[in-house]
Image (cartoon, rainbow, N blue to C red; front, side, top):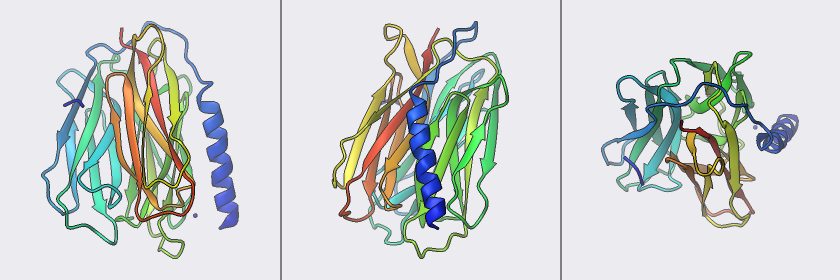
Length: 284
């Protein structure tokens, strides 16, 4: 491995289904833009049992086109509270759940870097406070989505992200409280990394894990086009029927695959699954 009223919930489910159906149909035509100086970098925090973050910076001359994060040593007991992309950096932060853990764990921030003709822009939008409301960030007209990110402001482990679904020129996110009675004094902010010109072969792939009551589910999705010339730019995921009680362990971009795993915070007597999304394009 490389260095939530009923109406609101019904609306969220409808949006989730619609986005899932659309994702596989989006495509951008080839252009003169590509992703030169493509490289994936990461940096890891110290290992202990405290809430903590990690930051990674793209090599000189490149900028962030995609982001991810990874928790090691504490599956299901730590919420990845944020994965925030800026032009040149990615920051990730982990917060222990109410139960906490005495285990030592760390968090790693991942950045997909490149030099797409300096055309990237970071867009963001926050959901209204005190409510589990889906939020969509749309790139400006003529722009295309390369990567994603999010931040749970003020949740401190009491809520987790349910989905972060990329489309051709937008990304939609939704978070939920772990327990219905939990205070909703937090806000979800979603980030979109947009570009003026689409890289050649821009396409979004997804794969879904089996549906079961299993406590932990890994799923990977590959770039599968153009005779293996495609590489991963951005990431996304969605947790189906987790009820806010399943949290992301990792969302890792590798050269041609997005690695994803989610784990229940406690044993679940329901069937659930997780989907991984990969935004891919030709490297050159």
